[in-house]
Length: 216
Image (cartoon, rainbow, N blue to C red; front, side, top):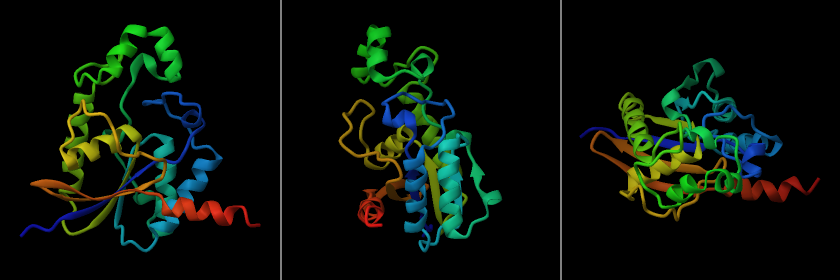
């Protein structure tokens, strides 16, 4: 029987653009102060989990989050594996705009976006169907190299959304009812035959931190 690959998937920490509801897509935006704090808390929470290898998007917000996790897991920064296939969905002309600005500047496209057509893409951007295929291909290429191991994937909200859909069979046009919080810990099992959801949106490490942060 083939051994499963244990996967811990983590969305990057918060950025100023997250806080402003501004679409980042594949623009390279840094973590803000809260995002750096979240990354450290995620690293502490995963320190003894046995992660052997960390793959991350090459965008700074994901890379810096992965560096914090690596630091606490005793993995050298130089051993991080940058993977462009784990980049956020490209939102083309929408990148840099808030959701309200998208509605004002691109009303017809905004309507099609809300209709959840899997094959529609923002002008110059990527469709949900294309993102789904990219993530499925990237996941298989990575996880198949690590049977019986525990690896981490540090990526973006759109990528985590597709991992959830791949694991649960949710359709691309199904409304999202699951959380995609910054630095939440999500757990999956991979074999070449199936991706299985083990646990999703664990934020206990962030909730507890909020208590002791204000008790100086």
